[in-house]
Image (cartoon, rainbow, N blue to C red):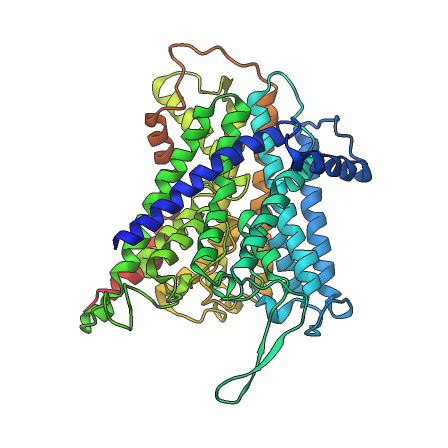
Length: 574
């Protein structure tokens, strides 16, 4: 790696942490029920109240965990219904300058489930499949809504840890409204304007017809792109306006736009850690979770970056100097934009799989086999290394509960976290959250490789073809949305199977973690003693990282061995 590569990575990480800290404190104010201050807040607060009043929501009425979970489920399925209906009626609704017809029922169901669950898996090319109305009113709205729902559930979980002897966790509808009005909309507006300044397209005009140098006719798609790109990154959604996603020059045209979009991917997930520390009254706890996330993320980034810079051993045996050759300048350039190169492509790929974002600025299918293992692992760990907006934080809290419980067993003491005793019920729910993604991923992959219709969609045989299937279910079962893309997933089997994985992963885990929050909220806070396990020390960070990695390794090492690891070994075969 060159000095500039180290500098870019360093600036990126510092910028994420530096901006996430004040943002997290502001989010704690918003989700903690306090009135935000400042001129912008004086405008947004009446808007928030008006929305609640029009919806018939009592701002002062709180919910227990069952009511909160019910609202979360209804909100998600309601979003699915709206997006599905818009797609099926697309042909008769303007604006539709490309005159696109209705979307196939199976694909419409998959897309509706995808965007309502914050997954944004796409088995289609947006510019060729969806109208401006569906992209904006359907998909963009759900990118705000699903991200706000994740923040709302996170807020309820934090309240469960911070409050004592109560059944109340807040009001889901109020939390969603506040997260949208005060956090997501202002940030998305600022980022969209910045992206437009870099050349990201934002227009309601139809496609442009151009003549190439060869004299052929070329139709260039465009549309309201910047508004979608801004929230797709900030909300850890990832669904692009174009099929090429953020590798498309209309979505990501310059080095600055690449940096801003990459920064937006990790910004809110990192800010959630600081929000957590503020809301529980102990900032050290937030730093602890952030440190654990950073440790795993930086390790994954190091492996992927080194592998992509190292290049392809097949080319090396052919005598190609991949550090200088125009065939591979700087390493493995297959599937990558020349303007990004291996390093920035690796930075984006690890960020998008760590943060449950799913957007891409390079083809993950073209990464070296060893370089793809961290991308798979970051998803398969359960959306906790930054993870989705809100959902990554509460997913990591579940692993904290497991880590505290395991440590308590080893030293013979009752496990506690933030003064709350961890009992059998909390552990049962935590196990549900931890084991659900592996169950969905492994069961879905096994079903796909033995189903004739699913096997027919595999364009590659051997370990690489298996990895493509594994990646698809890892992405859907952990609400990520990125893809290897060497798999034809626009089929009834994959549309239904991946939709089921996305819905179950989002709702089952969300409800289970709310059950934990409800149980903890009803408990008293135990006084700290000499036997209390500190959960803010470097030792605990190391223990938490070990627990996360061990759980992931036990579940996924066998399939990684017969997929990307086996493919890596074939590259070195004589």
